[in-house]
Every structure is written in C-alpha cells, then in structure tokens.
Image (cartoon, rainbow, N blue to C red; front, side, top):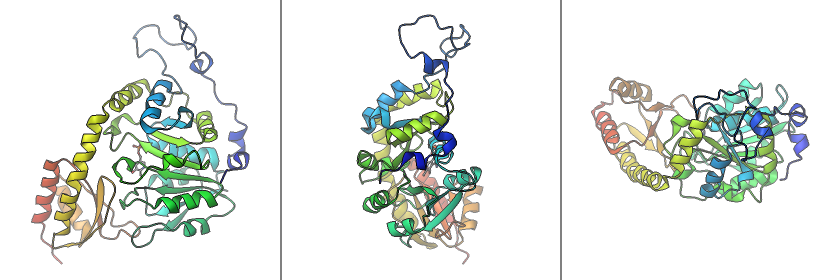
Length: 349
Ligand code: PMP
C-alpha cells in the first residue's frame, strides 16, 4: 500500500528543520580553498569531513545492487537503519511495531530503547511466516512490520509471496532484513521496491562481503523514506575510512563470489556431519551462512565447545529454538575443528 507519509512519520520529524553541515551547503567541485568547516588545513586527507551523503559510494552500490541512488541510505551498519526506523516513524509510548518471532534481537532492543511496543508473532513450526497472522497482530498504531529473510537465527528464507501480501495489505513500513540475502537462492526483494512504496530492504557488508569491521549497512526504500532518514541521521554517519574500504571491497566482487561459493559448498558437509551425531535431534534447512541444530543438552555442549576454544551461538532459550545451537560456517579447517570436537562429546543423556 502507498502510505500517507504525513500520518506515518512522527510529527516532530515531519516538521524538523535538519542540521545543515558545511558539506551540505557547498556541494560544488570547483573550489580549491576550503575555509568553511573549521577543519585543520594540515594532516591530509583525514583533516576533511567526508561526504555526508556518500555520493560516490552510493553510485557504486547502485550499480552492484541494481537500485537507483535516490533509493539508497547508507549507515553505520544496518543497525543504524533499524534504529532510524523507530526514530522516524514511531511515537514513544504510543506506536508499536510487529515482528516475526524468533528473529534478530536488535529490533526488540531498538524498540525498547525508543519506548515502542514490540509485538511478536510466532513463526510456524517449520519457521514459515503466515501473512494473515502478521496483519492480525497490527493495530491503528502499528508503524512497521519486521521480517528477516533469510531469518536469523532460523536460517530459512520467508516466502516472497507472503511478504508481498503483507506489503499490499499494510499501510505502514514493511522492513525486510536481507543481511544474509547474498547467500540465498531466491530473488532479492529490492526488485519489488518500484511497485511497493512501503517496502524497505536492509542489506549489509558485514556478512557475504566479509567486512563486518568497517560498519557499512544499507537500506533500500522509497525516496520519501530515504529523505526522512537523511533528515534524522548524524551529519557524517559514515566515516571516510569506511567509505574507502567499502569502495575497495565492492570492487572485489569476484573474490566475494568465491567466498560465497566456498561457504555454500562447506555448508551441506557440516550440516550432514552434525545431523549424524548421536545426540543431534535435527538440523534445520537454511539459506544463510549458518544453520540451527537441535541437540540433547545444548547448554552443556555449548560450554564444552567454549572450553575447547570453539564458540557457537547458544540459542536454546529462544522461542521455538529450545535446545538449539546456531552454527556459522567457517573455513574448512575451522569446520573440521568443530566437527572433531563435537564427535568427542559424549552424550550423557
Ligand atoms: N540484520 C541481521 C539479521 C543480522 O543478523 C545482523 C548482524 N548479526 C544485522 C542485521 C546487523 O548487521 P550490521 O553489521 O550491518 O549492523
């Protein structure tokens, strides 16, 4: 549905006069003497503020992702975009958001920080999502629906038709977090942006692009949403070193493709080996660079692995993930180390 933007955005943000930085006010390229930003003339190039709108980097992202520049927001990890969704759209103490459960933990943390009610809609037992359940959980105060696909920690991708049904029936923002999208078989939701003005797709350089340290997250959305984000974000939210490193990794797409292929070729081997362990009850299908394994005594196995210097994620306290460990696919050597440790674990019933 096309949102009524003025109804959707918090009134204080709608009326906000954003901070205008020196680099916002002078955007030309002819000048050679910069005396407008109180920068130090020495220590080039780090003496200069970066481009607040990251234009060069965005045009690179646009080419690679096939999304027009005006539909791109770049932030300090996708976590920045997640937080901005709350700060732009949700009135503290009044509005709410709806999300699949279980899912990535930051949505509920950002909701709590912003004093926004967080409504959890449990996935089915096979971790699929029913659009009608998501829509039933909404009220007139629901501003956003969060769908993570492939989902963390379950690993499965959410059915595209179900996601689009939510977009069509809901008048707020539908957030589809594709942090693990580069590993999945199916089509990215960014191809539906032009026809679904309330869709916001999140992506990141932290996973398939191997660049979690540089903190570069992306949000793809309608131009109106990008405009609200730009109004609220810190003026120089993506530092120059990150912009440089992001450009560099985006130019190494062949290496990135190779890493993805390697990870995807290791994944079934590790999953098969884990499924054969006598204490493994189930390995869940995945479209991400990790998978969930249901085991007897997850807490004890987690601790045992830690003692051996191997860290997996203990998800056994998470809804629908009782006794589950979330295992990331590593290098062949790391995977071998994990499997040999797991084979030495004795199931003590
Ligand atoms: N979304 C999901 C589903 C994630 O799992 C993560 C990180 N674990 C993020 C977003 C955050 O990514 P970033 O490093 O871009 O902040």
